[in-house]
Length: 497
Ligand code: AHR
Image 1 (cartoon, protein in one colour):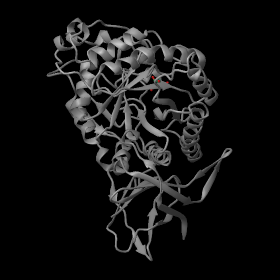
Image 2: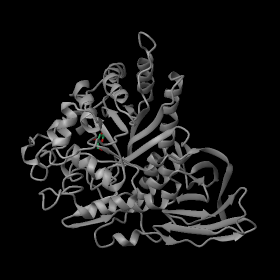
Image 3: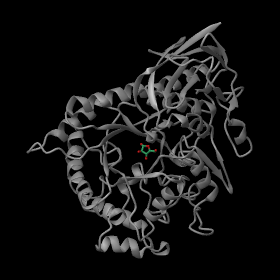
Image 4: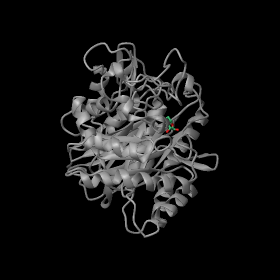
């Protein structure tokens, strides 16, 4: 029985899927940086973990946000430059964890290490400045140190520290969660701080030839807060428009669920909560539209992903890397495609070892998690034009929401690329797909599927990591309609050329 039907409206374009919609976030938290990207004890060379760098390189990451997170609003960038043995040791205010595991911040990984990493793996860097406990001067100095080519003391200091050419850093975040760990500010207070910081950081843009910087403000899941922030931002004495290129929010889901012990109803509730991303994007975009009249301000989901009861400060926010979490990421990437007209970036949390990381390490071993495979499967969407996709699907009642059991999105370029998830953890669905204006009978059709035959709570480790790679998916084509069978908890992709 066919129980779901997807129609891809190839002529109904939404917008370009910015590659940055597949971005990442890494913080000085637990084993993300030390033991993750960087050896905790420098063993050789620059101290990068080459196994991790190579996995990140293969991922083709468009953008990487650093150094936090809450850590950003307690970070002073000058601590992390110059000879490593002379850098100060500091407390990690928010993420001290078990003191024997991560007692303090050695500052071995700082601006040069981060920007060199981005250069090596071809990723655009995104630096989050300290608004909570820092000042605008410190933030503007960071731009000058990293990006300015002139003969100033700060640019010379960068050269003395081993970097002759300035770096290109396109994205500068002004604070992180300033409604919470970044200073507990009201929206009006943060807007005033934002204007102060943006005046100085934004003006650095005028000094730099061939270098455009984009400024990012942090918003909140509370959309009244976003609206008040936007109103206050626009409320200037002389009608001057302050540089504001993107407004962000963070959406984590699954906070009350143990991913190792969840039952099927909890899976449903978790997936429904992940899909609340859709409403968050719509509501933050509406808050921008309600106030901004002349500027294009993009929506960034700056931190997102599964956060379960296993991820607590004492565990360094570590949790198992499971099929169900990866499935939620696939569905959320589909949501982002639908909103490609307003979204400019998203950064899943966090790159290595922490929360819904893509790469995990233990001792000398590093491996890709199931979510890494989802990013691989969805990669062909990057840079394509998203198109309207309607899905006629069975649903399941989850509290006061309805979970669509089949979820999908599509994009076009030289090929049409359709991704879909079976969010039903306990049933196979037959799915028909019609791609308008494409003759499916004469097209080259390729299809892949992830997680067939795997339980939702199956967790990755060093020994089974290769079992999560994609398999070929059988597609039948009849009278221009494609048909696939999607097993429970699977994510799939079909390309037609
Ligand atoms: O990603 C972990 C934390 O979650 C970040 O530091 C903070 O921004 C968010 O609350």
